[in-house]
Length: 124
Image (cartoon, rainbow, N blue to C red; front, side, top):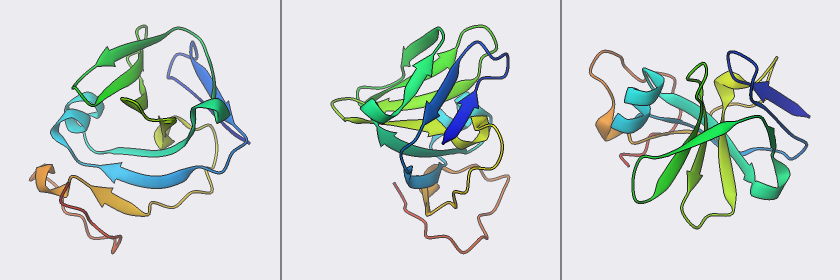
């Protein structure tokens, strides 16, 4: 079981499913919203239980982002028409048991850090 929450605790989530596609996103939207890259993994919509008042922000034509309007935590990413939802690995309570499988949107990464962990990188 993986459980997580926002900084203030108003929003909580949990899943019994094994998360897929753990990645670090370096796109400009994630950098602006998260203050750097955003580490996440995804599960089927039906496998993630969310409680609390999630505010959904439509950041682009392809996805929306779930945040806590009280503390500002950026918790979820939901692709338009997809049946999966990504959750922030940094919001997981305790150890995740997950290892990052890839870096995405590295062509957009900030110039203030290097990616040197040997994990595969995708330009977009």
